[in-house]
Length: 317
Ligand SMILES: O=C[C@H](O)COP(=O)(O)O
Image 1 (cartoon, protein in one colour):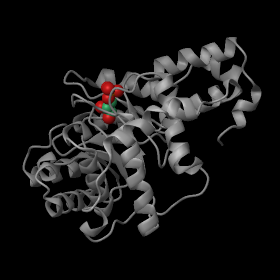
Image 2 (cartoon, protein in one colour; image 1 turned 60 degrees about the horizontal axis):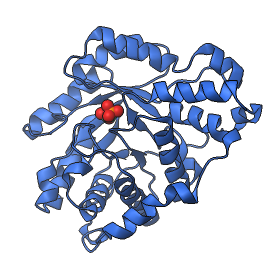
Image 3 (spheres, rainbow, N blue to C red; image 1 turned 90 degrees about the horizontal axis):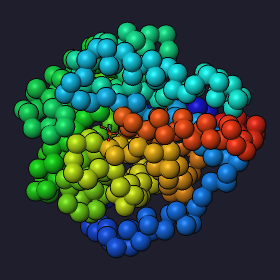
């Protein structure tokens, strides 16, 4: 990480910034669909981009059958996400993922397993994934996860507030969650697959940022449709508009169904194209993924045994 931006503080509830916005679905889909043909990464830089992607991964397990043992294995992978021989061949050392993301009761196990690594533990909270428990219980869940050592909290919003256009209720709820997080950074999961329209995605993004979110995140991974390019593009435009209106920099986390090295490259290209290099650092960009690392490691192996350039190690520093 190079320079450091102050944490976003949010703003008062300001519906005038979003209530007139109507996102054009077909234009957004067309632009998202043409991303691959407009932008590619040269072969000799691809390993560097994949290494960058690893540092941005929130390595995740969010399953009903999670156990301390599974979390410990995940944390071991988080500490050493790529085989030593590959890293040595790439001239890189000490690379780790961005964070480990677990359910609240798994936080102490992750904290212990990551001790001394500098890797933060992120916890989902607020009745993840549906968020349909009373607000005081959702706030208490945030407090529990923070007390257990989570430094990042991934909250879910009440989709009903979006679907009924109750923006002030959405703002109040997210602002209360941010207050409950204290020093922990808060990622607001919009569950975009439930929000019906891209206009709703834009408005919910704006509200989440006005209410003080450190990140906005697409999905829980449990909706029928999770991270997509049109949704991501819409959220990135909201991030850019919010920066232009307030000077505040909020991060972005696509999550759910992202499994391949190609997915990682596509979303990194999207970040670079829409927001610039600064937004490709782990303090502003995370990829929520439970099973992407394996494919990235395979692709890195391919580069090592193929035409890898040592210049990669300096790329995107
Ligand atoms: O927040 C992270 C997501 O739950 C991960 O989803 P995934 O299992 O589809 O990678």
